[in-house]
Amino acid sequence: MGDGFTHPYVPNAAPAPRRKLLDAIGVDDVTDLYAAIPEALRVEGLLDLPPALPGEQDLRRHLEETVARNRSCTGSWLNFCGAGCAQHYVPAIVDEIVHRGELLTAYGGGTYSDHGKNQALFEFQSLMGELVGMEVVSTPTYDAGAATGSAVLMACRIGGRSRVLVPESMSADRRAQLRGFTKPFATVETVARDPGTGLVDLADLRGKVSGETAAVVIESPGYLGPIETGAAEAAAIAHEAGALLIAGVDPISLGVLAAPADWGADLVVGDLQPLGIHMYAGGGNGGFIASRDEARFVAEYPSILFSIAPAPGNAPGFGFAWSTMERTSYDTRHDATDYTGTTQWIWGIGAAVYLSLMGPDGMAELGRGIMQRACYAAERIADLPGVAVPHLAQPFFKEFTVDFSATGKTVAAINRALLEAEIHGGKDLSGEFPALGQSALYCVTELHGAAEIERLVSALGEAVR
Image (cartoon, rainbow, N blue to C red; front, side, top):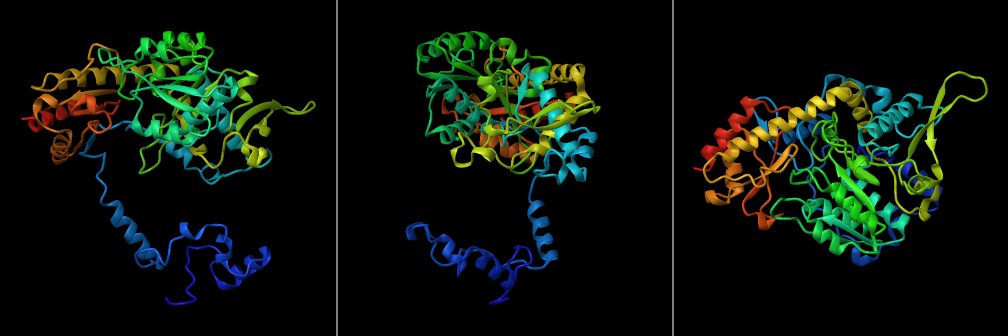
């Protein structure tokens, strides 16, 4: 390749267009663009990268070999790992719609150029609003963690406060993401987990909430699976102190669980992944924020909102367009209170297709089926010698913890044995929650029938011997 090589995958890499671009901005060399970066922060020399793959066939072969190293979750393989991204059934019509070229390739668009996409996202907002019991829903954020971070900042701005209380059982990844995102504006503190029930310790919450608390975050179902039966009381405690209640939910549970608006939530966040989105390596997630239609909430949304309006004059029909755009970083730029940019709009359209296909009755049937399967699996696993399922008497949704401490085996060893049986076991919690001992988080969805659960139980029985 040598000097003068022009890479086929790098836009404007040829000498002539590159020179034209540099001349247009008055720069002699591309390295001048990095003059503001201190020398101490620059990498000396070249990165230790493998040779370039200039041929398309070489690149394709490399990617296929890389993908082939993955272990499947389909066919003869079973997957019982969730912890934020779970394996649900995706109806064929969802894939058919989201892969349509006019939706898959539509990016920014505008009022006059993207009527179909604008309406699809408006329908997404409407369907999600009905599901969570709120009138206003954001377009999709990057994931539920990003939605939680933005909701916390919204609460801080609305109340003029800076303390936020979150459950001790929140995932370590989510808590780290939240702290990193809100660090300049909020202090994140944890509320203890009641070891007897696995739920938020309401006495500890009452002792920690104060006039400086901007928001209390309650997750139901929680990261470890339990349904927070004291969520309404937690909301009342937050409201007594003048704080907002942010509810983190799994939207696929809301066919059987009360909408968060019904038990006192002010802001609702969650991930769209269960609603017709496949698991992907590093993707397949999209968050949302929802609230009541009140000016104090709407004014603080960082994300784009779609609205509907009748056609002007006597013209028939309606139009769909961006609403109150001055809230967003698109308009306020460096003065923005939060950032919104390229996110996961395509997943919002997929979720809208999924929800419209399922309907209220379908979501209720689905939720009941998941709970029944999860309860059956937990009871069968708890019957294994030396294996315990804590808080089995407490209601939970699709995930639950399994404690292998009494077997003398580590979760890592058990999961290795399960892989030999073509089963992905639960997420190892021993590093994230040391107090739980050798525990794993198992996830059971509508894809797991009696035969699949019995196969897991049999493999676990062999693994713990």
